[in-house]
Length: 521
Image 1 (cartoon, rainbow, N blue to C red):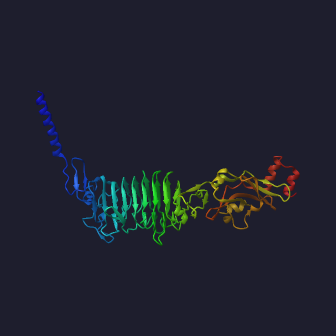
Image 2 (cartoon, rainbow, N blue to C red; image 1 turned 45 degrees about the vertical axis):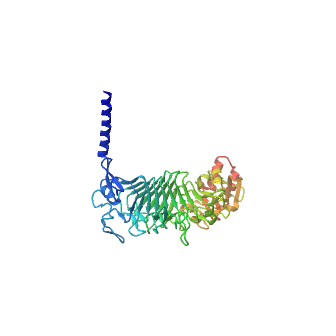
Image 3 (tube, rainbow, N blue to C red; image 1 turned 30 degrees about the horizontal axis):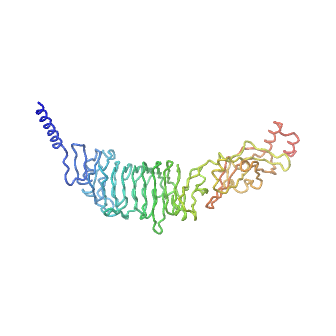
């Protein structure tokens, strides 16, 4: 009986093995990719046929060996693209049907294989005109040209190493000569997820263009880095271009992500981190605390012209000692409450050039964002002088927080007093808006009541005691770079000498004789 059971067990094991061998997939010798489900995989010798198999269906293409493609990969059915004729060998997916843009495709490696895409002509676009979302996962990708997925797509690189605008010989990566990495027609997103993106181009990592308003996002997360190797010519991360546009791009980085600019720029080609070519374009920063944008060479964080709008949350920009010695142009943030950039114990102006000829260590430039109107304001009401010459007096207060925010600069305080009618007619309560002759700068009649915390300003020799006045305090800031800015606090109450005197008389704060003196009776 025992012998029979043993023989039966052996037979069952053989049958099980036979079943596996009979129904297992047979991998063709030249296969580079597979699609479909386990047990019914379809194998492909090239990426074009794998992409075509998923058209209108979507799904995952698994790369199972190193692969090099030597033609542009187009995502539409146009007959030509630039100087490149689209043939059956390089059309990936035809989109002249109802499935356009609805079925995402993932290209992943079952290990980190090389996926090398060489355009038909060196430096041209490699992926073009895709309108479906594309994800690349667990691959080493080398592209000798740019990537133009066009509009309304999300392109994601997850667990990848990407050498963009580059060629590879053995294990040596060198620049290909292509200007930019990605060009979106807008309304798209580029995501790096646990990915190292080495940019060898001489222009922009991501550009957004078009003839109407465009929006786009660049997202770095889970330890992703954009790195500019020393052989890169320039370090533009984002460029929003074409005249007269209203493009908006959001740069979002989590606490573990970095943009590292290790580059040696060629003569006449400045290092620019971000470039907004038109004043109507906007870049919104959304950086978690801990995210790094690092400039290791002299140049501009935001372009020489500082055009466009830069706003959002920046936890800090890292500057190497060498770059700080040479000089780095800081962003000119348009946040209403950005009063400068703090580097060490110095405060630099918004959009200033930070230079420290004696720098020996890396530094972090942190934007100082503070609402000055909450820290510099006029006390309620006003007071009048009883003795001749009579006048009106306002009291300004300075908060500890404001003094701390301006600690790295040289500051002087003051206030202007003006007829309320003039202020109402002006666009703003500033010297420039009011115009010479329509206000009195009380700097010469300035007195600290409490040192560095409370000061008083007075306007005397007022002929019309019924005229209403108001006042606004200001602080003049001389930054470490030598630039000077005047920042205004909160406006005071509207008061007239007669109104203040009458209130004081009603409250028995002054006598009738003092009231008559004030009123000139």
